[in-house]
Image (cartoon, rainbow, N blue to C red; front, side):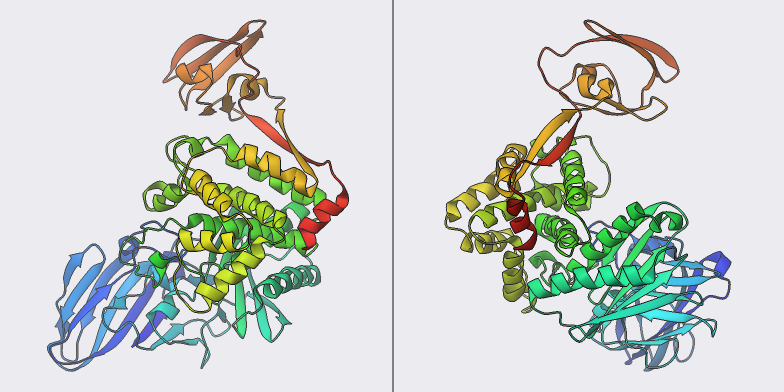
Length: 549
């Protein structure tokens, strides 16, 4: 089968698409559009962006029937070539969407390519009608200019592309693999420095996994003129959208770029190949419920940052600041009291990528990374590390393409410790359970010469009364254990307040009605919203073992 893409009017952001299929007489063709994509476990309903489906056969126009919101069926009355013409509104510029404008074409085929049921293993030719000066960045083979070749549907939808006359390209090679860096947007950094740092974290990851089964790998990076941060993993590439562009030229912006690139490269092994059973293989037409988010994203988040420490990009102070932010994000939210990380992973299909109900759930990224840190420190006490666990996961489930579940992960961790019952207890309490992880981390950090302290914030409204606002006084969060939780609502606007010896007098606006409350001082020493400070309290050799072993 063959796809042809054209963009007659880039400003309209409409991609014009033609799918050509050779059909047998009497064949029923089921055209299934994906409803979700790899790396994002929520229904996206890409069919909402399609326009003007028209099917023609060898003789005349063919009628079709829409069976579900994203499944179309037609019958081939004659043998021959059938053409499915349609348009897709490509106006989503993040790492999982598609975008067209007068300067670039960016396509995630998962958004807009039909899976032809029963014929998913057929090879697919892709032709792009683009301006002659456009370069093409994509992991798929390019037999001719502006043409791509895919072995099957799964390979097609796992191979996004960027095309533009202004693409910048550099590459580096490690152990026979060529790593390509494609940049769409303004480059305000030193290429030599960037490539040097990429080489370091790439090499460290490859050394710990022992192999990188690919000849080429592509970083497809959109550097945008506005604030943004997103990355999506693929079999032989990753798409990253980040901005603003002037920020990337500074240390803070470069840290974010390095962080997301290290994270996404780690996904080459973890998720793209070490996959939960629920997505082995992918079926993009229905939900794929999985409890393994702590492995898929928690381990990846922790290890992606850790390799920047291990490669020397982060110094110790920078890495400790990163850990402090993880603690703040992980424990400021009390979702762990209400839903386990395995259940939060399962519910990704429900509300996993939205803020959702306050304190209902945990983040598989942030909380998952803290769980991984705890497990890494437990393993370290037993003379092993998390990278050894993940290498064994690679051997058992990645290179063999066998799916895993949480019990498989627990079993491998247990095999690296002298007390497997302790690992079982840990999983019962913190992976399947809802216990407080902080005391465990607090007790484990001294083993690598670190101490963590809860530090009251200077903002007394947050620390003493559990109220977080924006700069205009709008209430954003209320600590559920604070007295304010009984009186204030998210969305109220605080007009003014006055601290008194016995509490806080506060005036606020709710729906244009001015109201006043008095909040007494807490009767305990509780600080509601706090900062976390991690300091080196032990010998430097202890943390050095953590970094280099």
